[in-house]
Image (cartoon, rainbow, N blue to C red; front, side):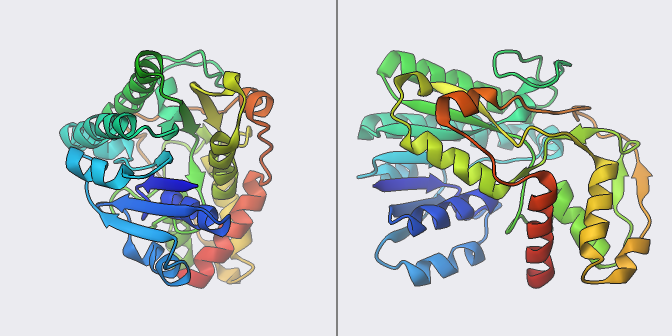
Length: 322
């Protein structure tokens, strides 16, 4: 198969590229390195020189999108500007990347005759809905510019499926974590940020009282879902949106305790590091828990890694690589 991964230099994208290459696929990566890192790709470029191709380009430029999809059969669209706080600070750039860029990729894929367009959706789409667990058919009002952009992606994908006969599958990611997730920068995700702090014997700062909860999802579960979305031949499984999660809720207080326990195996003093609490972040959803039965039933999804098992793997990677 000839596959394009946009945002392939990023955390999820680079793991996806690696897994597809291991399966014998021919993979092209499109990235502008706004948030991704060339270091994530160098081992792939070295190990798979004949099957891995890097295109430095921007999804906001339609010509870059057309260049990237040339000869491609399947697209994994991972490129986006993540982070709720970043979108609140700079909604224009978030919109340009996540909506204009998404539409460019859809148009380029349509014109190239791509067989299936699989894209990164987001649990932020559930917005102010208080329903737990989160079921794909029940959403609320978005709470941030980022959430709006990811919901618009779903609407555009649905329209392209209905209007142009494209095959699309959206994966609503729930707080993905694991190897290669960047702990640096103003908008680092909570797990790598906490790990970096704890490894330095610095107090991690929890927004709020620590009782907000998330469905933290290990990267290998997410890769499994993407590959199931690629391989499914069920007509009823296509042109759908799926929760991509483990299906278990963990509070931020519980998360820190997990991290302290697993990091203490490498440095016993970490167990004594205290936690600080700050104000609740604007745009944050209080609780998030996915119902993954739709993915189980239609795609055969069976996540291998629990939160605890995934955190052990992630902590080991950070300890060896930070």
